[in-house]
Length: 285
Image (tube, rainbow, N blue to C red; front, side, top):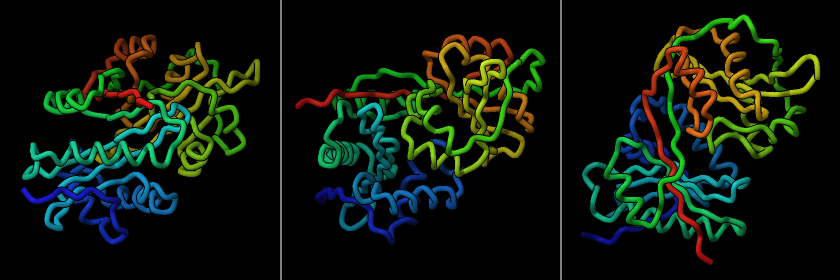
């Protein structure tokens, strides 16, 4: 086989990148190109496209892509999405992208402790692939789908629109997943996107939670909920979130360590429809 070249994408390769990306990640076929384009454009502006995104090409043809991110608050460099065109799998493309991505993380970030790769649990080949690269499976993220519950009736918490002034408090909340918002700049980006609310305890006048409500792009009557909470208020924040949902169905992504929240949602009829592992590898210095 011809030599594999791994490099950052060029500015005019947005469409080609997307076409390969959508062949390798479940549900990406349903992602609107416009949404991907916003992700690309933002990464172009902040430098992530050049520094961390990667493509693999053989004889001038793009055969694999990776979208990589830094979770600076945790000291992780994460291969967020890795997609290889079906015609080019099991030819060393994925390994080449991972190795180049790891090198890029080390070049641009000095205080990193771990590499990470997010992967779908139903792909046993993907699990074996990352384990052969010395990654170990650590965190499990569950997607739960269920009915909108309406007003739970017993929630004493109140809600208001989130503003940038709330960020110094929000960064200290516990996120629903390991990729939850922990960086002030990320919080600013999220809040400016709309659909964001803070939840507070009126007697103490203290913020105890945050929710973001996003209309599902694939299903008209479905809302995806992201949330963060003060320890001890997780279930209460999730219950309060249902008061604001206007669709019939709801999606949560939740890390498996949040037992009480999972117990509550399962008891209310939610079902696991998807799951994702995080594989990590400690950086050797």
